[in-house]
Image: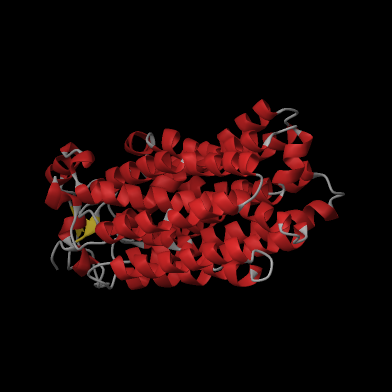
Length: 433
């Protein structure tokens, strides 16, 4: 098997020697089967918790803003906090993973999400609410970065299917939080604090499967005959010495990640409000956001598997971007009349996220390279996405409507498609650095 991404994607029976580096799959055996079971459960539960802290807030943003006396601009700042935290804290993930092991860092990330979700309802002002949100988002940030790394390490021969599995769980958690937050809040007496705090239960469950993996810091792969194979420290060291900023593919991937994240966080933060302002009831607006998010459940499993079987992922990028353009156009012209159609189309467009994660796993030959590429692409990408939700809030407040903000959202789909096609070319960052 060669080192080319297209060959890696062909789902071979065993991982190639190109994957034998310090961040690689654990040795086979009975203990390894238990380990892989915990990792699989951990991936699914962690993914379920990577968005409820955000989409649950989007569903109740109007109530939270009224209680904490937030203006439209301040609410825009609040919706910009997730990508800011992801960029700032995500860049620390590779160093933490090298020191403590990726599983231990993800475990700590789940604990941080739990703490933030428990503290956020106790906030009495905007500053405290932002601080508690930032704590949860810090845990999400490091876990975001390390999900592709965990997959590359424990499932090097199943990158597409495992990426699809946790992407599907991520989409499911996102949609559940969007759909259930308002009804649960009503059932709990209409207090938004309880409606947001109830998601801490799911976060507590996500900590458990990672606890047995905390000390699992290193691993080895098997040779073609099943014998343990020593890591290749020279190859991993060479990968670690190459600066990612010298790779055009890394930059294209970072820009693609940033633009799709911009659209995703604008959607999660503002889409319910867009529908509510057009006359849609609050509960229905939350369900519409859930429809948008739930589209990722089946597609997040299908798209990574499809992407790993293609030499270039540009056609998928263009197809998803076109759905986004049509969805935003409909949202601009008939937000309530075609609400369900626009929600479905924007949900399809948002599946650029699992595609980006899949390309991260394909654009480097080694696990060590994936760690660095994931940190670079996601951290730079989230930095790029920070102004988007804030700008939408400012434009909404000063223009007095949603015409200009929605036009901005649709316009961003064009550069997203361009850089996505560049990021999807059949090459690795090692080829360029």
